[in-house]
Length: 424
Length: 148
Image (cartoon, rainbow over all chains, first blue to last red; front, side, top):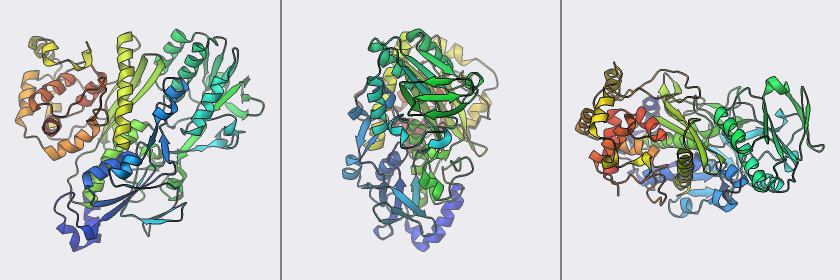
């Protein structure tokens, strides 16, 4: 697909394109425009790596509505008291000052795929030769009947990091001994498969640290099983005995709805009361990707397994949580890896840089208790048109405390690495 | 002592490497595919156990020699390395993930193959090397040997 696309693109460019002999030697009068929507693990990584490769020969515009970006990954460690909020919040200063990227602090409101422009909430219309969409997820609030964006100010989801994360933290800190927390976990597919269960561990850790041993955390899950289930369950029994109760649909019979004011979640079999409700609803691609017509019935965006190009528009790449990336989970690690493939193809499209077979990688780290880190991950490649795993690993239930500590230390080093990789 | 990132003089002797290198049959085919750059593993489920391609039956020493004999394609290496540098950052002061810029080509190839042969025990690195072919490894080694 990539060679066809490049030929098509070169034809569009006309004779001038053949003059581009080397990557980074684009002629000034032919500077191409790459627009990136979303400044998270996908978008920021594309921006920084493309700027490095293109060496100023491509105009790069990053549209992201936050001044500073709080990472969802490691936000559970903030809830657990292991990180402060500043340490998971990052600015775009280096991308702007050191890499020459234009950052527009605004929402992308509309994409005109015919004119190849993006209109922002600040009223600008930005032209693109190639567009990268990494908008993350939108929450489908009413997938849990009774829940809404407004009620999230009382019963936080905290599934998009920022003020919601701080709100959840303050509510956890306000709990008293004997209080119950009720989490409604999301249905597949959703951002960060182990995230809800790491969060349960981190809430249990903070409660236990404060001596609130009579508190309970009830998880009402629409799924029969979840990521790293055996490892989490063993950790909960070991560190937080009697504190965590997980109920799948074969026990609760189905989640009927939430009454946020009353502090209750109703299921088919019972009604659960909580001093704190953490409602994580179903998810879909960020609305800009959907309104641009790039999604399918699943609410996410089909992409080519070799390039991450939208199957609906070859000038647009969709990466991260918004994409349907085969066997890859929705994670910051996955988005960062997909970004590298996209940068290679942007350089292939816009200069005549060589392109190579795509390789993808994901690692999901979780903390269960102090110095008890677990991990799951895989390598992926395009196998017969789908992104499929070629090798994988997962922490073992019987491994030593030293290995768990080492895994936690690796996760901290990974966080330092990926955030430098994103933000410079 | 961190076992995940042992130096060569800290690893098992060459005997055990060679002995383990003769495990499993029919793996030459995988090396062949890898050398052609079409390293494809069919779909299968990994459930919750993790899954890796089998350890090659070629003795480690021979594999090292073969990889080093392939001229390293630095441009290919630059793409492949973009995956590595998420964790192995140039300026990272954190010791849990080592710096790899500037590693000599010979050392790099030997160390990475020791992950592929599961003689080094970091599971992330084992999985990465498990699906990396000879041409790719040669390209990476060339790329990183030229970085400071």
